[in-house]
Length: 172
Image 1 (cartoon, rainbow, N blue to C red):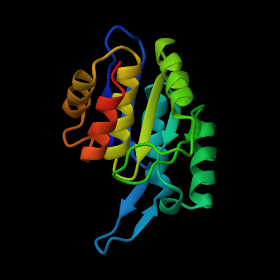
Image 2 (cartoon, one colour; image 1 turned 180 degrees about the vertical axis):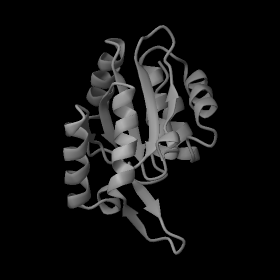
Image 3 (cartoon, rainbow, N blue to C red; image 1 turned 120 degrees about the horizontal axis):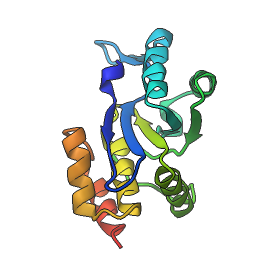
Image 4 (cartoon, one colour; image 1 turned 120 degrees about the vertical axis):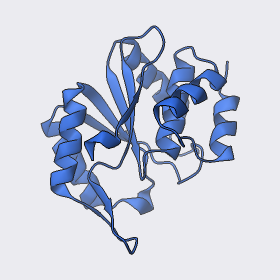
């Protein structure tokens, strides 16, 4: 549901950071997962209403198929939201597959220009919360303040000790 989007406002910046589950994700009683197209449209409409410029998809390659990624990219683009893939294993910190420092600096630059950025992972708590906090650190917050801000916006965010340790290691 669109109300599943939590926002955190970086201090002294016009941009904001959203955290959410994969848009349209439905988890059935038996644990089966699928993407509901109508629900995905509702979530993307809510992101567009907040003038979100960029949706960063943190799901790992084995969590989402190429068709789902293509469908999300097309639906997001139709609402003028760019989709960026940046896979991280569930409950983990960023690995070595991407140039994370460059990506974080790019996203921080977008935020400094007043743009809104949203992170999505499977449930919208662990990886999304971790990367929202990482972006707050990149724009001047301490790790502790970033973690507190993210957890205030989305209680339960930043789910693993590995994620917390990663954030503490990023502090200037």
